[in-house]
Length: 486
Image (cartoon, rainbow, N blue to C red; front, side, top):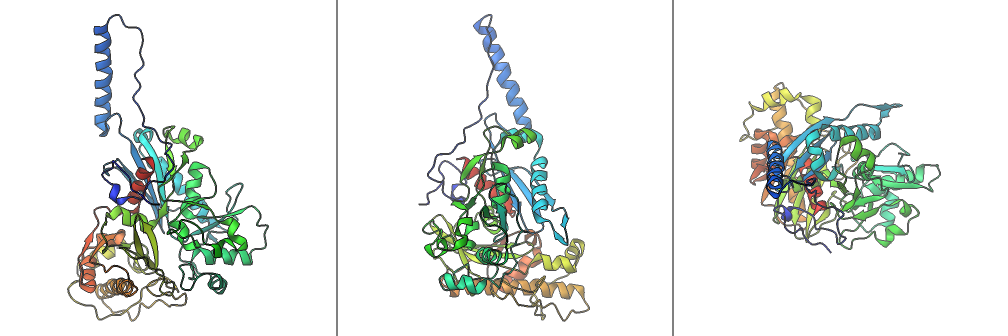
């Protein structure tokens, strides 16, 4: 079912190509001809045309036939883009914070994400846009949108990745296999079931999409398409490549999107967007993935036992394993990657907690005074709010960030080490559940920039920890766009 990309130096990193043929064709250099006085003049004119074209493109770092691949990462606090060539070289990148739009008394996330999407397209250098062959993006896992199936309009506020719907958990547990991935109050299926049972509106034309699906729809215009990474937490089974019967028998099953492999071609970029931003007519849009999967792809961890810890606003772990592990008791689930499995989960601890306490400048300066070889005596469980997903699935877990010592250096040390202990507990749990034992950890996300934290984690984990060559999920999304153009 799952093959691999051929003729690409990055093929080992990418998802297999779908069996259907691509709709992408290479952009060609067209030289307009006219009657010539003689063959010598024709040859001289042709040479001039080609040489001038090469000079112009060399200034941009391209040959005339070069194509580029655009990936975008929609994380918890902002979005990034990366533009790469087929060798994986980055030619442009940038980031945007989400604008703070309010709707009534809450954040208008749909408007904020949409604005950011088009801001990122605007940020791509104008001279490079005609060279973009394909686009993909990632979004936060289990961020769930209920939309109008005719217009794409949001019918309810989005359910964010870390929101819990405990009211729906008993119902979901009654229909799903024991300890299934969906048997977590923050799963997509719990969010869908909660909305279905509590909303009194007409549901005839409604659809469920994930954050990445909806943003990609804004680009390609075909409602109801998802990928099997995002669809995992609504119950999709990537091993058999279908929704299970126990899910299809539910009354809300008709809301479920069609599912393709991550990085599969969906269709061409919409004409109005092509025109507005000067993208090429043959630019295609591909299915996406989740932010932590994109970060794993970017890190180029290709062998079983290699793992990626993404230290962004939250802490997400992905371990490449020969064995699939699913256990909702601990928030553990597996995504498919070729013939292996990405086993892991996502904790609510992470950088968002740090940023509530310290500024970026404080984090940098205080970290300089930490001795990473010395164990902290402080024992915290840093959470931004009530609730944890992994390695403990407990929607009622309270944050623990006290007592606070007088020294800010000591306090930061304690928080960093406590997050490292949570990471260590997660990897031990995966081994105990039967996954391949971790032997090396790569780090992505903003936390990967803190060298002292890396050394703390090496000591706590007892493993080599290194910064990934590429640490941004946007780079992994760009690799999916490359895959879709093959």
